[in-house]
Image (tube, rainbow, N blue to C red; front, side):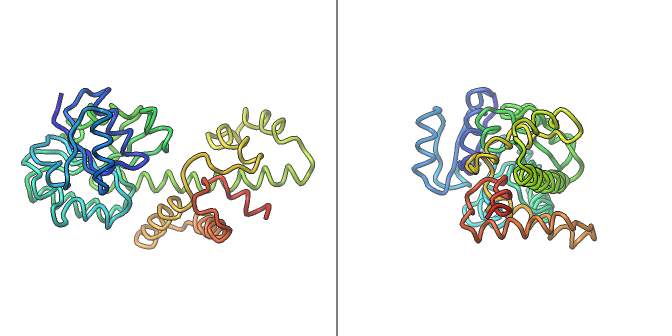
Length: 289
């Protein structure tokens, strides 16, 4: 059992912290911007609610965060009353936010200045993966710190991998989102094309999903897409945030991402249709409008 802090109890962080307490058996202190939510979590799982990130991190061996973006992350770490104010020597800070590689490297250096450790550890698997404790976690940082943190992270994960130095976890998550964007657009076009041709989409997918065209997206989203329902996962607003990070990194490293850039524009069209909180499979709605 370790002394653990968790900062950020959104749709992902709330169940992730729960798994650290229930599965991991760790002593948990949680912080959320809305204190009532931290109190609710503490009442449900038996942990302690803190009023600031600094209070949550005080004395913790491992500190997790799962917040919205780079600015939110800086606020809860190096900002006023941030966790880095009380981060003890040799503690490991594990950030599960999908953020930029730049902020990961920045906070890695800031943790080192405090003789502590920082691991960027964005996750894939969505809300269902968080609730079921089967997330994929992509890590960047130093191997000794990763080796210490991995058994703790595994409380909410089915796969935890060290991808390289600081920032490598975030770069790997960017690759994940690049692949998803292209897959969902291809699936949307395939379903749209099949419907226009008058085919039974269920029969089509039952056959092609067993071959080279098969994917997680096809298996798990084709039914709801075919029914025109888009309330089953990762929201368009969140995907556009992620793709903005991807495209900014591509501008820095010179990578050419024509399909990703185009799909990002298509998600912008979905937002204009009012689909900000629709899930990412709503690319089909754009084709059918």
